[in-house]
Image (cartoon, rainbow, N blue to C red):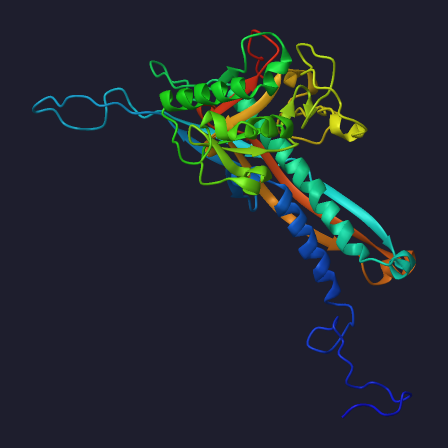
Length: 382
């Protein structure tokens, strides 16, 4: 029955924040933050599902086994068959260690939350998810670049296994070649041929380009025959692996190493500057430089080596198969929030997103680095 007296307490008021209608009236509201953080993370990381991912428990590192090729030989009548005489296949290992804890946090003052005309925690949660996803992708893409510059981990005598591949975009020493659709198409076909020649599976091959490279490419979709023609219109604008060249799905990302920057770089044109004019007040964040992330460096908290800025001075794209790199997670994306006495003392909550992961190269043969602005391929990471 509806309440007739406005002073009568609303005993049957629905408490949307309570669990099963009892207890803390705000208990369920925290779940909104968790969901928003995970959504922000999942929507902004593309690399996580494009490489070998494993979950690590009760340890600091995870072992990946790499098996080389074996051979065929003729049977000698009367001779016992006890395995190939050359001891094939050779086996090697790659161990990936978890780096230090990644965190992103914010303090939400309770009064600000009360006065705000919008849902404050949901907005903060998405930004925390974005920050973790950005760092996650950057580590993986740097590890793939590292793989493209390495030899095979198989070093057994009399066995030759293929290493990484580096493909030059264009034929000049102008970094602007990296934005030429024709040059990019040719580089993709060269990369596909190299992966075929090295026996790398065609399953799970992808390419990741800077956004301006990607948009330059799709402008010629109808003319150069490089795209799956079943996908047209707005779907190809999204950069979610719609466009294909030689069976390689193409993604766009602001997190690939690009001429020592992330995502894009403007300038007057040189060996390490693609010469693209800044279209306007785009903001300084567009040209964010790569940080030094080398194992043992006092400036970082990494165990794995991800290189420094100068080592990516001519990098301009990646093509790889999922075996190129691996990532281990000791702590997946998680949310923590203060409560109780701490919230009372500070009249607010600290909201924390955290992640413990590490990435490194696995099978160099499955990695291809695109480079421009130089006649010689970039050297291995130090």
